[in-house]
Length: 234
Image (tube, rainbow, N blue to C red; front, side, top):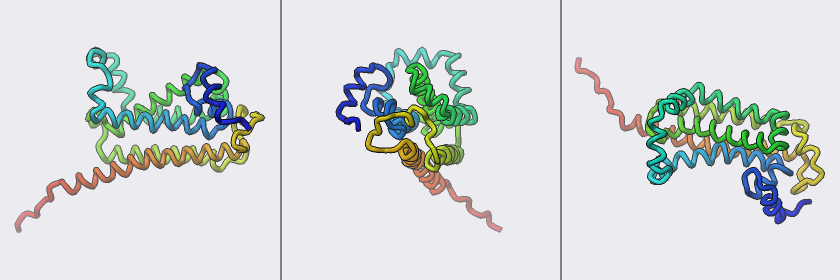
């Protein structure tokens, strides 16, 4: 069994990827750690950043001298407007989520640093698109409150379906982990793969589930605050 204490130094020696002990475990030993890394990048990290932008962090998030020219760029604005169309954003999110878990692409990302960086970058981009629609940090109201509730529910449903593929698997899907002679924490490749599915289920239940509850509460408050129509006298 590999000592956990040795992993941070080993990670620094590689000088690639995301510099943390989790990165070393994810790339070399445990699929469940890699899944945790993915959901932190694509869901939790992006969601927290966008929520923070809605609050005081918006004053310090990006320098004004950088934001102003970007905001005036017609090409960038058109591109973002296209990518933030709900159907485009959700298709890109589902496509990235599914494609990068296909065994050939998954193994390629683990074996080639540039492919791995492209994988992580795509997760950040598609995560930012869908969470921008959910959080609406700039108040553009691209979606109604009801549509945001529907989007959160669809994302949660799709994520759970993908997680089931791992939780109810009968054999390891990824050669990199199946052929690893050192089994960290004594997990077999199949048990590790099932744990990866559980990690995905729990993380998405916490992030998207929390978003869904908050949106439902906002809808309830909106209904309560709406003026009630009084019947006309007969």
